[in-house]
Amino acid sequence: GQRIRDFLSAGDFIVFWAGLRCKETEDLVCSIIGFYTVSAIVNASEIGPLDSHRNAHTRQAVSAERDDVVVFGKPDKSGRLWKHIPIGRFRNGAQRVDRELLVAWGGLENGDGGDWIDGYIQRSASPPIFRSPDKFLKWFSARKPKLVHANNV
Image (cartoon, rainbow, N blue to C red; front, side):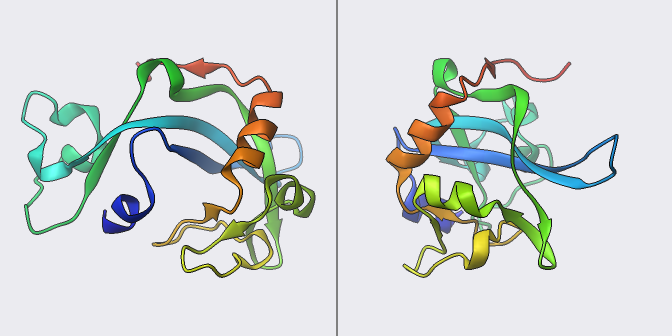
């Protein structure tokens, strides 16, 4: 939670990705599956019982001692992608962004100013940060992503 608060505020963005298995080849493909423009960041312990169903971090008992947060996206600029956008694959022992995309995006960093080694994006307590958010947004917008603004039913 604190890392999110250290690096994000209203108007910033979060990109969600997943490792997906290709049906034809069985290869693992890393793809963008969601995008949020941040509206607000709220402590999970402050989410009331009527809203607790809206987020995985609040569907279970949450104590005030934990630093879990819930990020709310601007409804018109946030959602799941209608169709995933492939960004990488499993290589060199981990899930990684393709090198040409790292160049197009301006690189990834670890939050301490260091490079995120060779596009490493495998699950981590410290997710990567875009070095040049504007370059990423230009690349992302050029793909004309269609955002779905509703939860799965």
